[in-house]
Image 1 (tube, rainbow, N blue to C red):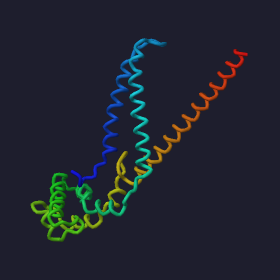
Image 2 (cartoon, rainbow, N blue to C red; image 1 turned 90 degrees about the vertical axis):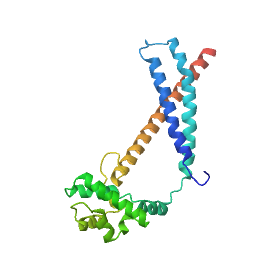
Image 3 (cartoon, rainbow, N blue to C red; image 1 turned 180 degrees about the horizontal axis):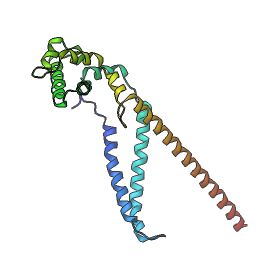
Length: 213
């Protein structure tokens, strides 16, 4: 289907993680319970290490290129989110907070989505008549539903999300800062290891020179 634009690189990368995790499991199983020192079992993990290293390095290089050239169309993203009725769940949750059973709020929000889809407009643009239809067969006041719809937007939805790992603004900022700290720690650790390796190589060269003199 040439009209589609699928994130193939990201999907394949996600798929590759299963392969890497599988290889890790194989390696851990091989070394489980081995005595200290070298065991012939360890030769079994060499091919796994080489293939996994190749996959991981190649993937990181590709992702680096992708992220460096990625362009986000914020205007289009906002347009799509506002027209895709993402606030339906928020409406249902706010009705629950008013003491209405979730099975009822689920029916109301579901009807709102159907009406919005049929009229080809977002929930926020539904008429009073549409809102009254959504509460038919329930004891919910359509004015309450209308008030909730008016006060609910994609932005307010993101601000309300507070749970760990959620899409809320605050939580996303926390996770980004956490990942940045992790990356910086890894960089510091890698730099320290490189310095130790270089120092060891220098010492080894000095000892070699002393021996061959």
